[in-house]
Length: 100
Length: 164
Image (cartoon, rainbow over all chains, first blue to last red; front, side, top):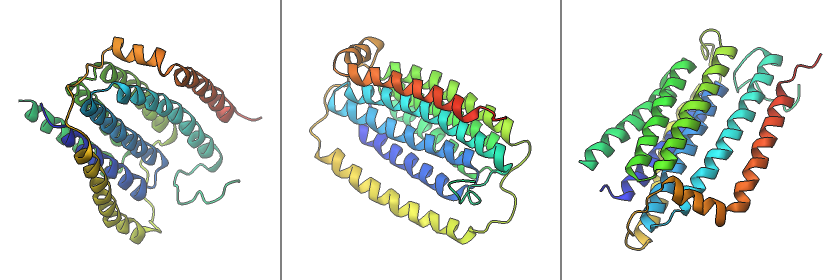
């Protein structure tokens, strides 16, 4: 059995790669996928630490995280589509106004 | 044996995440995301979280990845991120900053994993165990998620409705 700390370390690396993706990419869709990477990293850490403590609560929390992620993806993609309909360009550097 | 499985899956996870960040074409990024999510589902299996592995494949690698690919197909006919980059120097500064961030996270997690007590026997995360916890201790949050999903449905329809 692999120690849980390996899983936690992997989740830290995965989360940092998600942060890097959010910082360096310009396409809002790719930024959104990087946010999914971060959510997955946190899920992995939750499951690993829950198993370390021998409780099921970590996995229940991951279930809720997945629900929130599904809702977040739906609403976020709708916002991106709505912005694209108005601006016809897709780069976060140009979206500097809260209204248009 | 389990270490070999873990290392293979970890390399898949990190490699596909790197592919997602580095490839310019968002469609390739979405396919790398599918590989990443499936590998994390396999990692859940090695952690004996069978229910979460199944949900991960169905919800993430199924529904969410299809949603992403669909949005990319609708929005971006060709390539993206080609034009001049006004913030290029700032983007290079992001790499060392993320390195510092990773060190900070690793230190925080190290203190947690070292201070927690000796490991307990792993619990099996089957449907029965998760369902029992969800419908007893976490019943109210579970009901709240239905409201959240309903709000998401209504919000998406309001956002994408064409105004004449």
